[in-house]
Length: 471
Image 1: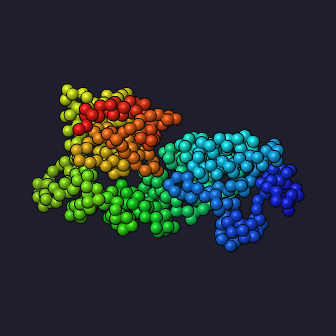
Image 2: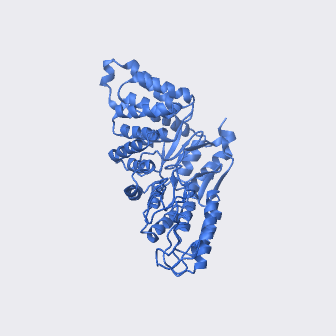
Image 3: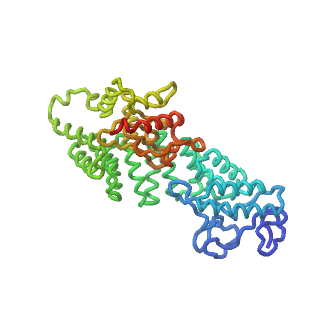
């Protein structure tokens, strides 16, 4: 057997060419051990990609299955001894094992050593990039993914583009994310996950038609991908195509009739069409699932009032601004009234005092735009009885406020792109600290704010005064 790179004769069971250092590629499928033909891209028996090792599948984000050629990655010709190449690969394999065990810091340490021995070890670079991603060192992860692409330009596996694109999506660099997703789709247009990710990017830059097209492709490739119905419904709402939104919400609710937010969104669509009876029915179903949700109750009250006033000629003559008046204006008014009292030892005063500063991105009280408040309530904030929004931080690029931070008189809510929403009641706070430039509340990271130290101080003061404020 000869090296495919330089033609030198290979020793039996050799892992690397002793002359040029090229990784010896297997002649059998890594998954089923079926014989492979020269130049084959897929196993003729099981269909597995030749350069993808079947057991090297590990989630990166959103439970996607992304792989990279592991011990079969082609090594570029560099001035590295065969012994160093072997040792580098051994360390990389151990680092990969630690990664699978979620010991990311230990994995990074071993992979650093592996890459020092052989800077062109693409497998080590790829695994280190994944580890950096898990510890939220996104810039370093991007750097490693980019280096893999530079070193392995002749590979037909474009998984690295997908992985890097997801990080750009997290960093809200949507154009770069779309560019990488395009590269991956050009090589594999059968992966529903990448179309879903690209749709999310298009949605954020308000390219709604393209987002709808990608969500539709997701559903064509994988009809069980019901979450795509929910998001496509949201996009149709943005386009004011409420009938189509309702149709998509129907499909989503059929798969999950326990999602209160879906009933609320469908109710909003019925409301926008003037079908107040159907809206009331959906709001009631949402409230049944989440009895303490103040937003759902407010929506129900407004729909009931509109239904009662329907047919009254005077209603049609009212200014549309009155109809569109948000509950936030009523809520913020009550908060402002409290704030204006002389007693400054309140949560409202603490928040306002610490977070209202020059160049602050926090919105307070009546200054919270209706679009931002609605976006936060739709995405990650669930108000309970007597709970009121004090301030809101919008971390999105286009102002939709579906990711960010919201502080109420009861607690803190936050959400980052592609991540699950989080919330902590002030009364439940047991730890507030900074770890590696991250604000950590009760062991939960808050990454979306650019003034973490001020937010930390705010929460510390609130926690110290809780006994005198919350009763």
